Amino acid sequence: MQDNPIADFVRQKRRESRLTQAELAAKAGVGLRFIRDMEQGKTSLRTDTVNKVLFLFGRRLGPVDLPRD
Image (cartoon, rainbow, N blue to C red):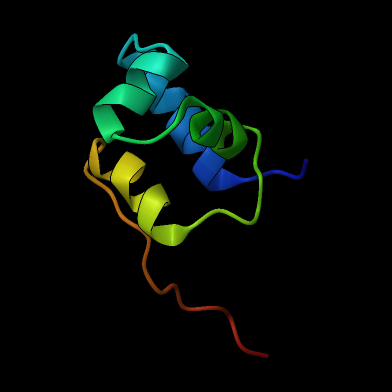
């Protein structure tokens, strides 16, 4: 899959925290498959569930300004 900053962030933070994917899933209250899909950069994930994972690392999804030409 394509370069995905959220996937990269979650993978990096999970590894820094010395958590397995299964441990991260349990802590976030999501399924292991969700963590795997997220780290692989799947683009069609529920934002509320993504936020459950990001919350563990002090982050959340939100609006981002895009450059306008």
